[in-house]
Amino acid sequence: MLSTTLEKALNKQVRIEAESSQIYLSMASWCEVKGYGGMAEFLYGHADEERMHMLKLVKFINERGGHAIVSDLMEPPVDFKDPKTMFQQVLDHEVFVSKSINDLVSITLEEKDYATHNFLQWYVSEQIEEEALARNIIDKLNLISDTKNGYYLFDNDINSLFSQNQIQ
Ligand code: OFO
Image 1 (cartoon, rainbow, N blue to C red):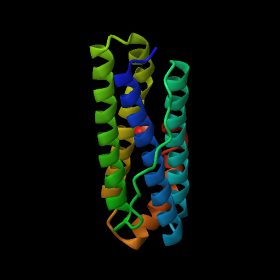
Image 2: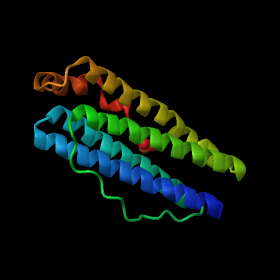
Image 3: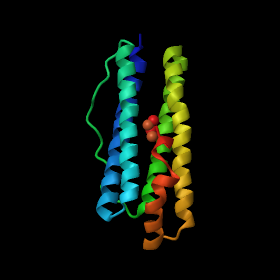
Image 4: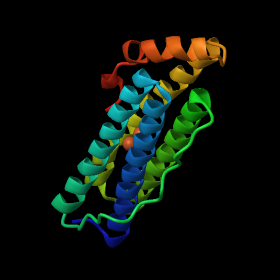
């Protein structure tokens, strides 16, 4: 059975994962409109993965005798300066998510809830991969100049360089 404190903290994470999905969906839509089809496909996939992270939490909370709450969400940004700035925002967001997961893990230790502690380990490893992936993308973008040609080539390559199964 989840403590009230943990139930509340896990529900906060449900909201964060749902907001992550909205942010990446908004980025995907921006890319699509700007003609960056490859980056759009990549980010649509990423948005789906975040929804899956959210659902996994919802199921866990309910399974442990809590009540997963579907709340309202923060409005995501709709416009982005350029792809490089946008992927920097992805990295910053993932760093924020990692911190939130780490805070949750601390609460499980305070509450001596080892089942939830164990469940959250999947998110801990996932965050290592997601931060690394965003950093790799930024490294690649730093290799190309901020020109239309550079972005065109990167857009063609993103899905072969960074396959969706790297994000789960
Ligand atoms: Fe990319 O964050 Fe979920 O966990």
